[in-house]
Image (cartoon, rainbow over all chains, first blue to last red; front, top):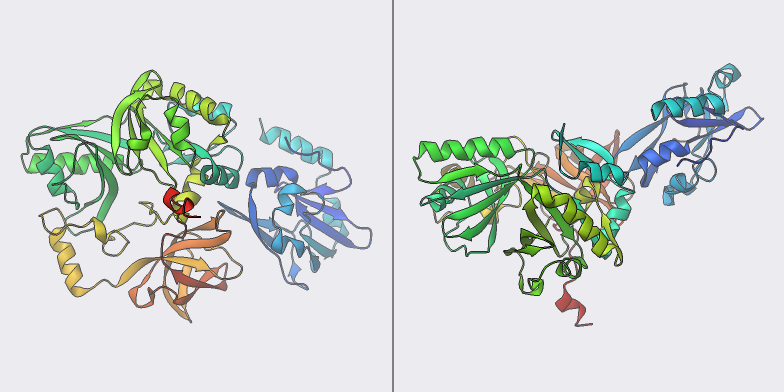
Length: 132
Length: 370
């Protein structure tokens, strides 16, 4: 059973979450549903600081034992921080996908992109449909 | 997609199912790593019903297999198993398979799931071509197979059979009562642990699965899927046909030279002798990643800036806690400890050629020395 999708952030159909930190930056991760599908995360490839990404472009890679998955940038921006703890403890994403398992922080270019993302209720609905 | 007799069981256990060669199979129940660790530490239970089984019997059964297979079966005893490759005329591997000798001129062949039909067509054609007096029967659909692997496997299985399993040596088998069925039990497997491959009527397999799971629960037996099966066999340095062996690769180019017996005539022998003369140009080797990065199937292998080959199998190995793999590379770079790199998403990650197996279980005889 996935953990509840926190209402304090936004979501994508690719199971990423984006939390606005109120200072023009968003923190990004993958949802608990996504980590449950992957299980056993053994490797995370983090982007270099300063990398510029466009919305929808891969910004990180998460590897489980069996698979390699791209994490897509929910909004366009510049990488200003990465969760270096994931280098030694990639399983943090499995343990706490919405908290300690955060992946990247981006300086947002376009706040409208963020507003266009799914809210928690819409993401819940999407998951309901996927499971039926 | 085809389903094994255990399909409903897997669904009830919450397994994640995938399409494996046309079969709906469990890739994992909870976690690949958990199922892998459980198999190395206590025991894992695997649905292997999708593999093929052929019965070969009759006055020229031995003659057929002796010619069709690379391995010399002359001194094979009743109750003994031999691993062999099945080759084409040009020495290319069709399949790796095991040969169980039940009695004089009575054998069971066990083939890979994906190559079952192809093996069948090949062997029946050979029998016809050479006019050999024997009968072949594809008993795959009526034969179920479960693998029970791990240090606790013997203890668990012993509770369900009167046969003394401690007397069954590696690569030997017996026909014995198991629960309320007759089964073929062999001491063999695909994990690098002690364990058994169990063959029983397909109609009795799900009942047997339940009994084993029940029996083994107390000592940590877990159902294990194809995900764990793959990480286990790779750590143990075992090959997967269709992935590590593809196209026209010969047993001389993969660690299967020991399966070739030139002191008899067999399909593909001439081509292999020729290749031995001219020398192999490529070789399947083990590799270990140094530092970050996981090698995966299809990733290119380099030596300095030169592309020298390709990764055939690769994963993060749960027991070894590092990334390992098998790669088919230019023979010039195949010596253990040769430094190579693997292109992981356009980044060259350093690696090293290593000997296989990567993992060897501790034998009881070694444990008692401590």
